[in-house]
Length: 462
Image (cartoon, rainbow, N blue to C red; front, side):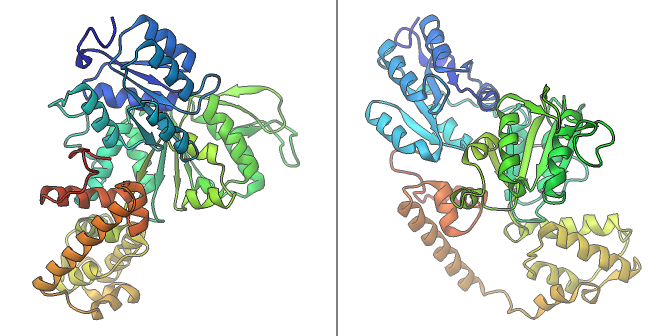
């Protein structure tokens, strides 16, 4: 059976990648949208699968050990001349991927994969647009202590629900204090590993000389002070997840050892020659721009792509202002001021302030306000001076001015999109906003009838 003898919509999609996390993510995502899938861990295995089974399309990583994705693509096309092939590539491979498109590849997706873009490509090939949403990604039911009202944060948890069922590694990015650890908690809670441990390591809080031992453990006598065998955090996280906060603070030597764990789950305790294995799922977080660190030679590019099977960016509080008051009320209640009356001026100050310290700063401010108000009435003077200073800011712009500002913003977004060939990641960087914030703005602009997608791409663009 070949793609030419059976409707593509009834045939599975072949996923080719040597990274089990990447395969798991794509399988979970596409299965959730009603597509059948097959998978292969190498180009050689993919060709055997193609010889034995009919498929609707092939999604292949470019850089793999042994037979590369490009060679796999060429041989697959010799077997099935019309087989649609979608290439997945790191930035360093994009030129090769573009060359492959001249040879007939359907398209390429840059890592980390944009799942909306992936779905759009699959739907164009198969002609199938499933009515049912991905399981678990419609109206997500948030844990009791998680507060999210803004469209941006609801979209973040939507992404978390997509990723949680897989074993894929997740890189959580965002400014300090936005709630990256909270998101890691939720991903673990929603995963099949929820009954296992979630082990957390702050890579910036542990001295470099001790971090290797913390992560991988050590043998008795491995170094001065090692008076007993110590089990490392990766061992403790077996069957569960490990959260590596501020992973960008690792030294190059430790980055190399972490790369080994992400590749095959293998590591050694300090002072031991015996190899151990872990099946811990890795969730990593950083408030740094890893692209910049890679260019400066301070972070390994291969480790970046291993950790960044999927990236979820948590937007700053200033971009999700609908969350400020619900979060403030939640924190006040937690600090015993749940029955206190909140003065109108207090609310106005909260809404004016930009919260550079994000949710962490808001929480600290609410703890202070709860203490000073004694649970009676919460006033502006109960807030820190830097927050109260926002009350002297200019009043909100009149409606006409606000409308004009919206128009200027839309024009700037459209110009940046065209300048970056409708690449959302590069556009978001140029506009100095999060990619998720850009996606939300584009959705609103598309609903207004504005052309925000690459010509010929349609409404499910990248």
